[in-house]
Image (tube, rainbow, N blue to C red; front, side, top):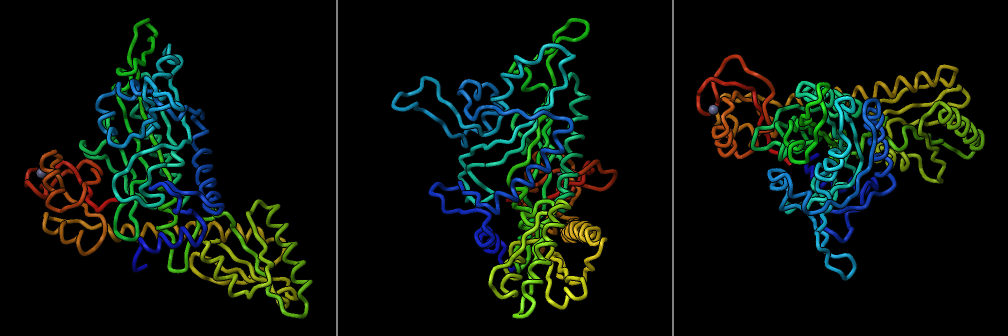
Length: 467
Ligand SMILES: [Zn+2]
């Protein structure tokens, strides 16, 4: 991929994921293929959250006074909020915000709901659209003004320990989620100047896109008691005292789909993980003049058997050259193609072609063939996962000095790891010198010196060009 940005734009159009011609900057139309991918991605995460969370749905509009209550929080969003000022011709006496995020919509209600320690923990989530008036250059699925599928969870706990533990649990859910999609990630604790406005701390998942920039694909925030104090979320302890609750929130946006498309895609188009592919298998009959009807009827039979086994399968019986069909389904990223011609029919077999690595093999159409298909699917996702992790890891390089970090960023398009003292002023200086952002810190560091100030290093931190 020589020009990722151009490739990305073209594939969204060609594979009918999104139409970006909607006449509002930063707002796009989901097309049927894109919508299906979106649905499968969303359902994977919903199934995971459903185990311990309950789904709710809050209104899109937030009254101005609620949004303004948490000062640090509102400051973080003030330049990005869309406002509704009129109802018909009447000017509203209280402006209403289109939610930029949902804390200030939910927490006034939490304050009504939380009564006793025995009510807690609360673990809710919702899937909603959120709005941000982005002033930077917008890009479909990556930087948008309407995030159409924000999967956000909000929890309330009796203690700091429980909230800390919830952060760990959320990280583990997101790890499983990205692993299922084969998306590699680095997890860091964001520097204080880049945490979620109002949070104690923010843990973030970033992945590396093919152009060498990192994309934030998930965040987990420990809110401490900040919002509980602002919105008066208190519970009664067993001994009858009233204590402020502890909260967390975490979310994943449409960017996860951008990463699935961008990271797995190649020159021929999409390479979709089986879990989220609209069609997991396409059957292409190879028809000559003689024996066409028999081949077609065997293909139909195959399709029914695969459907019954739970696969999303399509039989492409259009009157087109097989090569043209291959090209199209490869571009759309269908994980597995089955070709069947008259000679295959005689031998009771078919040819299977994998989208991930282009390998072709014979498939015996005996009693075990569904097992073989399942094995192919498992092998496809593990191959996509392994190759994308390898690729990302090969682009994470250490730097010993600020100059080295700057050279690495300029020449190697990836993530730089370095030793850092953890001091805010020093960190900002590093960002300025290297001209990219500090993603965050990965963990405590035993020895070594800060790359910039030479004081003892506290952390291993990561730097990268970001979206
Ligand atoms: Zn330092």
